[in-house]
Amino acid sequence: MRHFLTLKDYTKEEILEILQLAKKIKNETKNKIYKDYLPKQTLAMIFEKSSTRTRVSFETGIYQLGGIGLFLSSNDIQLGRGEPMRDTSAVISRMVDMAMIRTTNQSKIEEFAKYSKVPVINGLTNEYHPVQLMADYMTIQEENLEENLVVAYIGDGNNLAHSWLNLASKLGFELRIATPADYQVRQEILKNALEEAKKSGAKITITQDPKEAVKGATVVTTDTWVSMGQEDEKEQRIKDFNGFIVDEDMMKLAKDEAIFLHCLPAYRGYEVSEEVMDSSQSKIYEEAENRLHAQKGIMVWLDSQREK
Ligand code: CP
Ligand code: NVA
Image (cartoon, protein in one colour):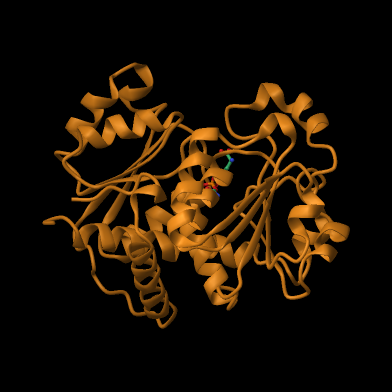
């Protein structure tokens, strides 16, 4: 049985296989062909943080695959009142077929997975957001940008930046990350990515100059400067990220055919300008839609690995 906790645990071949499956199921869905890949299966969806895309894509996805999703907000289940993760996992996983969790520390999802009888999917932690990156790469594939791919990630060295590091280091593309000095990616995650990069041929650069990162890039991406749980730091962060907005001037430094991606929710006028969000280069809604298709690929693939 496999879990989907970080992209670090996956090979290039597995990542591409899941995306291939997602693409196939997307084509079927677009043609209104809904096959029961996961008949009568139940997906528990545990949320300790807010969500629009992750919730809707998993709940719709499992339904379209022939199963049902249970939305379990931590406010409404005993987890929120202090029931341990291990008991929550041991109990829920005896009743459902798969679980997806959005939580704070990665160690909490690891604890859940340790006691789970069913595959567990990371729907975002403080450290990683692997399901988002699957949708992002699916969008890159659809835009035919896989060859000579150069991704510039501008902004906070957060869960998104970490998952970009994981993905680039596995697939072997060029990734440039620009963050302010005090908001760099975690050193151990970078170190792991640089090790992997030696095998895959990925080129990873870290800088504090967003312009340097964007120059000649084929994908420009960013994320909120204030992640969930950091609301108290908002004022300070807005000051510290001065100069890191992805605006039209910044996009001009990228290749003409470059696209703009954002996992959303976006805060216009902060990490990205209104004009870039609305430009023809922006593929944010295609990317968001691909969350649905990527989730389905991940769930069907995990189901296929149960006996292994
Ligand atoms: N991108 C993303 O995960 O969005 P939600 O927080 O709305 O799920
Ligand atoms: N970095 C953001 C991503 C939201 C999808 C957060 O963790 O809040």
